[in-house]
Length: 560
Image 1 (cartoon, rainbow, N blue to C red):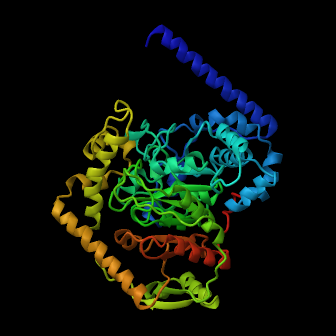
Image 2 (image 1 turned 30 degrees about the vertical axis):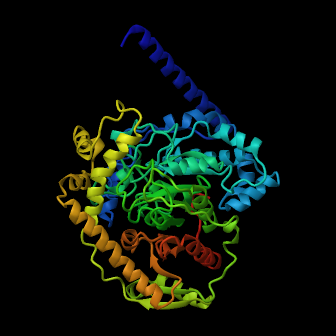
Image 3 (image 1 turned 120 degrees about the vertical axis):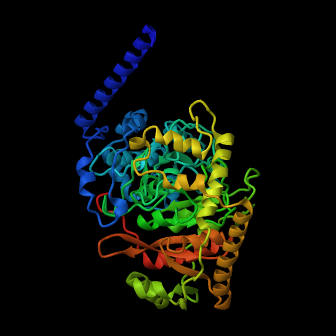
């Protein structure tokens, strides 16, 4: 390094230290937010080594790579200037409220989009910068978000989409201009891209992209039996209903945890098989895995072009529908993408229907083994619904993993070739390249191994065999669901959490999970509705009716 570059480096470093110290002093004197202090997580890691769930016997909690102050310093001054008094006064207006209520507060002059954004940022700073409460959820923030919020305030008018001015978080496998798209992997830590199609759609409707959230690395297609919610880039995401006690679900772990604790109005996750349903259920939020093709996959780091889809994750059903609606649109770059548009104001009607006369299929094995599921079925009956008991699907999912293996082998290189801007910053081109990159520093890059990547490169299934597997699985699962729904005139089939996610995945059918309650130990559990292709509006109506009657969701203690 030359002398001039050294002076510049020292100057920048000194400036950063002075800013940091100045911020710390201001925060202390005003009892406001403080910046992050790295800590030794070894005691917490050791405490989990006897956990009854082997996947929760962590090797690390905080990222070995990410300095949280790099994320939080750029907006620190403005967040710190947002007074505690104003934050507290806004809690009844914002906390746990749905989008229509927030928009009404803005219309009545009780709230601005800038204040809404600052409220969520303040919560993020308060909880994520405190090592006793951090969930390791936020791994990037949009440094222009407050400027964009002020612009939304100045341009607010009639007839705008309900998502207008609402802060939204994105899973960090969704391409976003101005923020890295890492998929949680160090091979992608400097990956810069343009906006994914769904991000373009959100922005076109006036949504505010607040930041990026952690995920299970490579959408949980890296290691086998490893913790969900872990990535080498972001560290270990924790569940707010029981930090280091309950799993977060995966792979959209950050999307689920951020919604549980009110870090934004809404979040976007992605699913191949269970990756929206699982973290939504584990964090007591509403998650929709749409029909394949309803939402574009362009600009999303893939596992499988056959089964991947983004989807909305929110605290309530109406917000879920609003976010879904804001992402709709046919994408010419995605061959599975279809054109769907629902009638104007369709989300406003959610919650107006009740459960009377609705017909649901329920699995006998779940009735026998889960008391909360049984109680929920009785609750539905008491509210006028009819329950038909079904035998669980006796359908072997032979070859399911080969779909993921062979698709990822082809789809990930295609994503890199098309979406990665800086090929000097991202040097990998294939799954084999990623494996070789990881082997250069296994303790940091793959502390839990990379067994799933190994399966990707060694799977010998032929193209013809793969085609047959896809056809057989789609046909057999659709036949099962269709026969049950048609024979008994069912509105939907009911499951728990992500228990039947793989069946819905290969059928390419939508599934909606809604908070159902909490186990004796406090762990969330959810009711999952499954219907036929492109029946999302019906699923959301059913979910809204159940949500209105049950009011099951509770905000986590310690994050109120």
